[in-house]
Amino acid sequence: MDYVEIIIDRDHTYQLDTSRKRTLPAGWTGRVAKDVADDVESSENGRIVTPEPAPKPKRKRAVKPKAKAKPKAAETSASAPGVTNANPDGTDPDASNA
Image 1 (cartoon, rainbow, N blue to C red):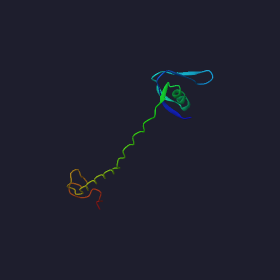
Image 2 (image 1 turned 135 degrees about the vertical axis):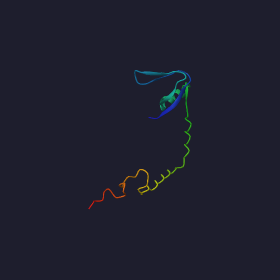
Image 3 (image 1 turned 90 degrees about the vertical axis):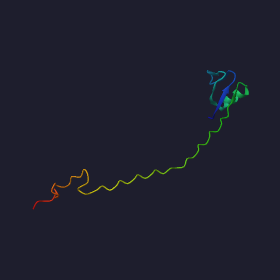
């Protein structure tokens, strides 16, 4: 079933089924079935609103993420701050004492 947007200018009552009616008050705006909208227009109680086409979104160019800077190579000398991989006499602590 197709639905359309309407605006009611004067109260309009229509039959929902054999036992129920619906009244749309003046000033009401909303979507109804196409046959109800046609009935509203033919009785001059309202009008079908033609929706304006939605504006097309502007396409944005894809931006490549910048590559992360490579970390600088760590200094490997025993004199580097925070490096404690040698004994005070300069010998390797992991070397066996044979």
